[in-house]
Length: 109
Image (cartoon, rainbow, N blue to C red; front, side, top):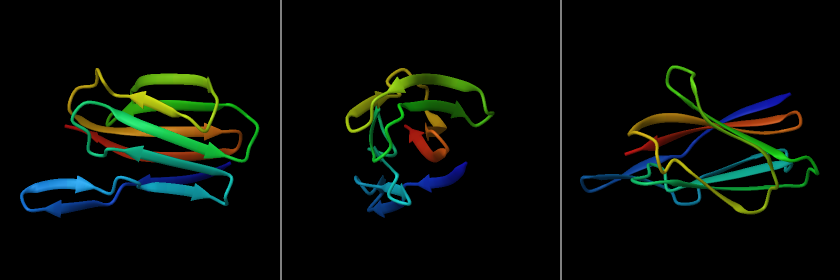
C-alpha cells in the first residue's frame, strides 16, 4: 500500500489564516485529491481524480482517531461534500483506492 500525507499549505493574509484553494496531492499519477476550502467555516469539498478503476473510500477521523464519517463505493472525478455537521476542530480525511491512500489534515472553523 502506498500511503502519502497531505496538508494544505496555510498562509496568512492580514489577520486571517487561509489556505490555497487548490491544495492537492498526487500519488504517481494514480490518485489525485483536492480539498477546499481548508480551513472551512461550513463544509469541505473533496474532488478526487484517478486513473484507477476501483471505487473510492473516504474516512474522516478526529484527533483521537475516532471515525466521524465514512463513505464507501464512491466514483472518482466528481465533488464530494463533507463536514457540514462537524464541530470546529482538526480532522484527518483518508482517501483510499485499492493500494493507494492519501491522508489530508483538514480544519473546521
